[in-house]
Length: 92
Image (tube, rainbow, N blue to C red):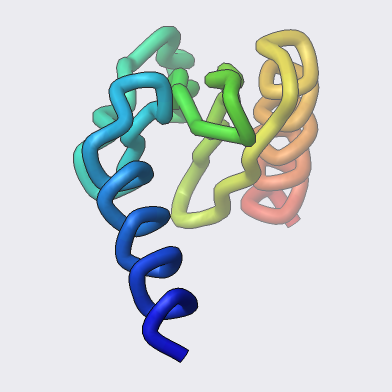
């Protein structure tokens, strides 16, 4: 049983001190404002860890509704759809 304990401790130390493993935290990631619309919509770029890579995600927001998008074109399409539906509702 003593050998199992030493193996586990060796694995813990190896991964704790390894420089090859990336250290990411969503709490320390800061979004970057990419675009604003005249009616108040925003698109922020967010770098999110996924496995051993970092992926760019775009957060499109307008009047309290938000959506994470895979690319900036999808974020633009979402904002234009939400803003146009908001204008139709407000005119009615």
